Picture (cartoon, rainbow, N blue to C red):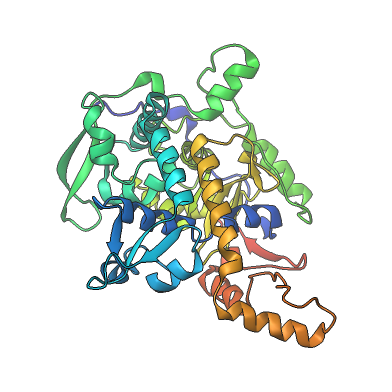
Length: 422
């Protein structure tokens, strides 16, 4: 496959601004957008595992060992108890062990989700997203284990290799390759040929739409920046950002690795690659570990990490749901997506079922209710008081997972990070 075009040598630049102090401020709206999907990915993985059985049910004992595989926060039996509006336990016969199947409501959602995956429009869209992801790599290929990290965020079906890729032999092929990081053989997905019609970034599409003409190389396209409340940039930093925005925009589908890695121009290209990556995802967000894994493979090293720190007006890193999640700010209005993909609509319906199961929670909820009754004796008999499910222990976990650049800050407190003079 032909490699992406190299940009002109004249764009070699140096870093023009150093010692900029940038603070990180919690964004409650984007935190809510992330926290809303707590346990969703794990629940859908379990759901897919169950419906993959010919009987659409599986013995409880066969699912118990899958806790680490699906990264479950607790045992599978407790997960099934926690979400009775999605999972139903039953005993096929007295001589057989307990089985798990989907509830009728969850099965209905699964069938509607499957219909979306089977629709020609969605299949074509998914194939283009995957092709563009491969085109972000210089070689047009990525190891399957890296693609697997993004398949949920890309909106791919869980069995995308047999369900989707096999029907597009003109696009993709799977072959063996040597992993450049550890020297071991690995399976990679390769783009058969460069797709020029797909090598147009969202930034270029947007500029072309508003200007009514094709975007020429070297134009200074500006990234949208949305700073949260309580965020103040020093004047010298704001001036530098404006100067940085005026630099030529280099397409993420071009090869600009020959630029000095510590230059402002190289950093703008790095931001362009990160921006396009997040725009390819149906939720416009993904776990930070996925971003860094891809960045290492593509050869960016710690440049992705620096871009996240240097440009909090473009990217937000949330510490919610036991991990760190990179969110594209411009894709959200408050805590809702500006453009909602059909699959995101389905996922919100699954979340509704998950939340519906809250009233069926185990005795832990009853104990919390009793404690509240001690200080609220006038509460009506039998009324269950809904509490915020944020616990002190959970917040401690977030802080333990946080790097210093993304130290958790609450109550409008801020932590400052200093851009490394490179």
